[in-house]
Length: 456
Image (cartoon, rainbow, N blue to C red):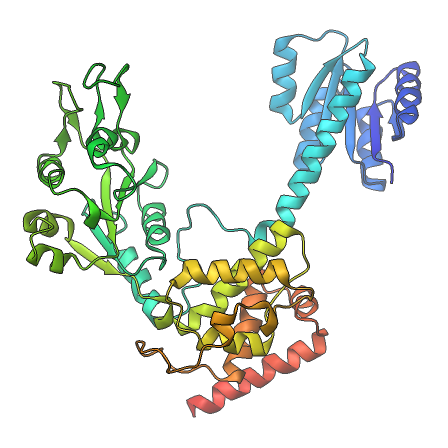
C-alpha cells in the first residue's frame, strides 16, 4: 500500500506540483491550503507523513508542527520553506519536525527525506510493539525473581542501593552476578552515572594495574599517550570487579590501599586521583578458602566483604526457570522473527527436572537453540538438547529445590507470565496461549478457586 502524504501549503500551484512529483514516485498525496484544513484532514484519515510549508497566512508551519506533535506523536513532519536558514531549521526541529528542506525542491532530496521519516516511524512502531517483552539494559528490579531465594536478593539490594558500602556478590558461574550488580547500580542514587565492569581474570596480570588506574605517557614501553583507567571511567558511578578471586596476588595490596585511602595514582604518574566510584565485586570462588590457603589477602577480603549477597544457583530457583524461559523465548523469537511464544507442558517438565550446572547462562543457550530449531509455535521436548531430555531427577546430587511444581502450578505460572508480558491484556494473552478468552477466564477462575481452597 502506498504511503499517504499530507501536503500543507497556502499556494495551490505548489501543492499540485508536489502532488504530481510524489505520485510519480508512488506516494498517495492529499493537500490542504491552511493549517486548520490540515488538522481537520488528520481527523478524517491516517497519514504516514506531513509536508508543511513554514510560512502560511495566519498559522505558520511551526505552529502546525506543535499542534501535530501534541496530538499525533508518531506522525513525522517535514517543514519546507523558500527562506530556509539554520535558525529556521532549528526552530522547526524544536517544534517537532523530523526534517527541514528548502524550496525550490531538489526532488531526490525531498524523496530521501520522506523515505527516512517513514523508516524512522516504522522503526518506532516496531520498537513499541516489542517494548512489553524488551529487557531494559539497567533494570531497577531483577527480571524473573519469582522464587523465594531471589526475592531475598531483591530485599538486600533495596537495603544497600543508596549506600557507598562495598558489596560482594558470590555464586556459581552463569548465575547472573553481573545482572544483579547492574540492578543494584540502577536502583541507587548513582543510576544516571556510569556502570563499568571489568573481568579481572580476562586482563593479563601485567596490564591490570594500568587498566584499573590508567597511566601517563611514557609510563612503560607502549605508553605513547596518557590513558584514563576504569576507576576514572566509572567516576561517580559503579565499578564492578568481576572474578575478584582471580586478581593477581601482587595487585591485591594496591587495590586495598585505594579502597582505604579513597584515591589512586595512575601508573607512572605523580598526582593522586580521588576515588569517586562505588566498588562492587563478584566471584564464583569461595574466597574464605583462598584466604586460608594464602591465595587471597585476608585484609582485602574483609574490606570487600562488607555486605555479602550470595546469588543462588538456578537449580535452587525452581519458580524462576519457566519465567526465565519465557523471557528468553520472547527475546530470541523476536530476534529471529519466529512466532514462538512458549513451551509445551512436556518440555516445561523437562526444564524443571534438569539441574542446570551452567545456571542461567546455560538455560539461555538451551532456549536459543530450541527457538532456532523448532518448527512449531511452542518449544517441545524434541527441540531440547539430549542433556536436558535424558536427565533423570536424582541422578545428580543437587540442593533441594523449593516446593515441587505441580502441573497445575506450572499452568498457573505460564498464564501469569504471559499476562505480565501483555500487561494484563487478556485478549492478547489468550491469543498468545492459543486459546479463546472464555477458556482463559475459566482457567483463571479455577486457579483462583484452588488458591482459596488451599488457604482454607
